[in-house]
Amino acid sequence: MYESTNQTDPDFTLGTPELVCRWRLSSCALPLENRHLRALKGRTLPRGMVSTELVAWAKQHIEWTLTDGAADHPDGVLMIVVDDHGRAAMSVGPFEPLESTRLSALLGRVDLAAREAAETGVAPESLWVKTDEGLLWGLDEACVPSGSASLVEDLARTVGFTVRRAPGLLDDVRSKRLRIDEAFLVSDEFGVVVPEDCAGEAGARFAEGYQKLLDKMASK
Figure 1 (cartoon, one colour):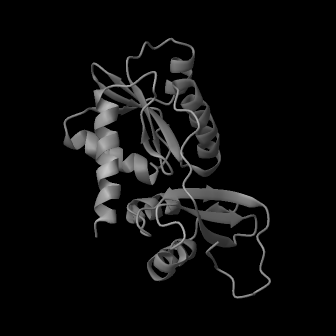
Figure 2 (figure 1 turned 60 degrees about the horizontal axis):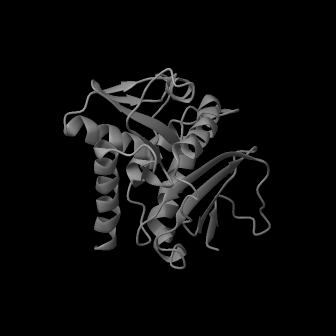
């Protein structure tokens, strides 16, 4: 597996992971590179904010080594791991589709992402629900949008949707306090995922837009 680290010691090994980012690739490239790096910069660790040096290191290795490093998995997943000493490693692995796209399974992923957001300030996956008034986005106001979420937010506003953050959205959906006809997951690893049992036109539209972005990278 391709791996690049921010250490020159050939015996370097990572300690306990404190941050793991998983970003989807297309044709050995990172389609949302700038958005992902902005979200990386917005994350916090127990020692404080992610350093500008770490972001610069990630950007350098994405630009200089990713094309060759992702040759075995051109449409795979780029993973960046930061350990409890602030050391980082980058690797590429295969993309594996979700085993289940039922809403209940996606809500479980959103729950885990929300816990990560409570520690780092960025949720790698978020829940979106379409209402008569627009889109509800299950994200706390204090959180920095993930790379994929910032894309969907911009696309939504471009096509005329009103987007409102709703921190309690997950609980409202799980408890059925909020009746929904359509929901979808936005993920840095899986893109826009439309639940098989809660699909609708809006989610399908954003999923199509995300796929077109991947296809555009593939055609270059």
